[in-house]
Image 1 (cartoon, rainbow, N blue to C red):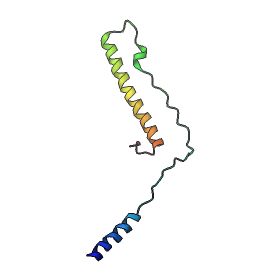
Image 2: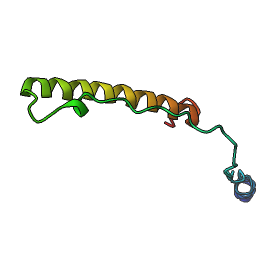
Image 3: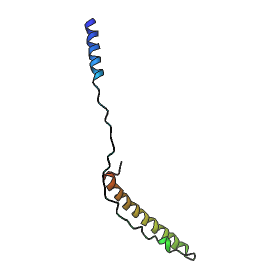
Image 4: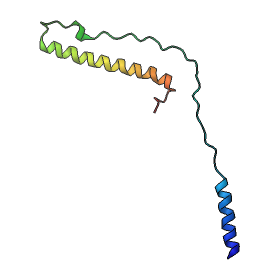
Length: 89
């Protein structure tokens, strides 16, 4: 019985000493090219006047929304290149 206790004590002490060192991640400055200039799109709502009919206003806002969605998608693609291609996720 004493041997069994001694074996368990020895095994426990050996397991307690076996630990993994902590890995520390240190940020490293990496030079990268400046981001490309992406021209802002012209939005159809900029051409509206006070006397523009309501149906034309709605069409202009919908067209502007689609234009902005495309512009946002282009910006995301550019940012993904700086994030490493995985989107930072």
